[in-house]
Image: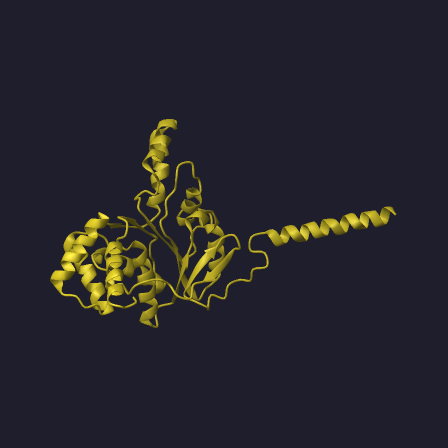
Length: 292
């Protein structure tokens, strides 16, 4: 009787252990083949890369008003795709000026070159909320020797009392594992230093050595070798963006009418940017019975 009871306990413990194993992140998830697409989304809960068959993006040539930063990011990404040294990049600044659009456009442009010396470039999007899972992602893709990876986080910033930024800082530079040679990290943010000002000031006021506390916060941005600034555009640049979109999508409108309507559109939104420009073009395309 005692033996049967012990056997029942042992069987129950085995079932519990199997259940716990199945609940571990990534349990039962096969390693990604990474041949289904050139872009993926990182599902941190499942430790899985989800293919993105069609990425929402525009051609690189259509991005106007950001010529300098466009060339810098393109050159950096080309060096990386060719197996040469390259830097992590922080694209910061004004909303709607094409930060995330540039990353996606550069990725597509390089893969479209078809040059023999360029390795397959894979774009992986990671959500800001999943930054703490970044080390697991790095370990997963570091084993892929035939491809290069740009891990991309859009709208990256950290709020007061968050500590996940320390995981990112360790991965970018200085950790024991560090960043794998086949991976770059690109991020966009409205903040140059990724932290709210009151967070930095709070650290200063409560620290034994205030300067060191501030350095701790600012040092995260220092881990990015490239800081690319995006600024609000002037009216000529805004109008040039719209004219470029109209020409690309075959929309018919004379310059005088385009100018008057585009200016009015920007005034109703209180801003001029690439995002405002494409929103105007979508409205215009709809009026002309076209899809873009």
